[in-house]
Each structure stands twice: as structure tokens, then as C-alpha cells.
Length: 100
Image 1: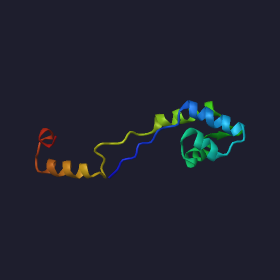
Image 2: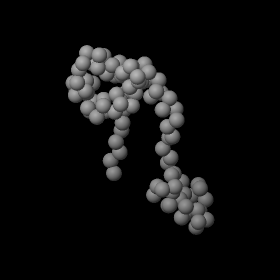
Image 3: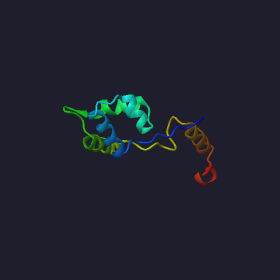
Image 4: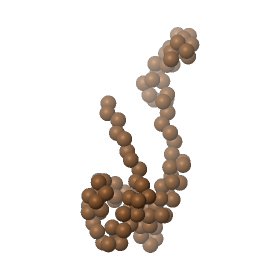
């Protein structure tokens, strides 16, 4: 299975989005200039637009706040295949050192 790596938008990219919107550029044009997909720019604008439109500083603050509450991925999550393997070995009375 291929794992995708996602890159968060940077403060400078958010500033470029705000500048592009002020200059009445299309989302497609902004996306091309930043090397991002149009849907990324669209989601960013929808997610972080305030009452007066898109503000890059406000958007960065909101992103930072959401990032604080994001949970890290578990290596041994209950639904994962590794959990079942480890559980089976523990039931067979293997020690954690033997499993590792």
C-alpha cells in the first residue's frame, strides 16, 4: 500500500493566496502559481475565510490551533493488523521482548 505524504500550507503560501484573492485571481491561477491543486486552495479559502474574506494571518492562527488538537497516528491502533498480531502473541504468553 502506498502512503501519501501531505504538506501543510506555509505562512508564505497563505500570504500568496490572500494576495491572489485581493488581485481577483482565480483559484486555478493561484493554485498553479503555488504548485498546489485547485481543491487545496478552495478548501483553504472555505475553511479559513472570516467575515471580511480571507486573511492569511488569521488563517495561519486557525491552522496552528487545529494542529494542536490533531491526534498523532497510533502505531498499534486497535483496528490495525499489527494490533491483532501482537495480541495473539501475548495470548500465547510471549513476552514483549520476544514479540519485538
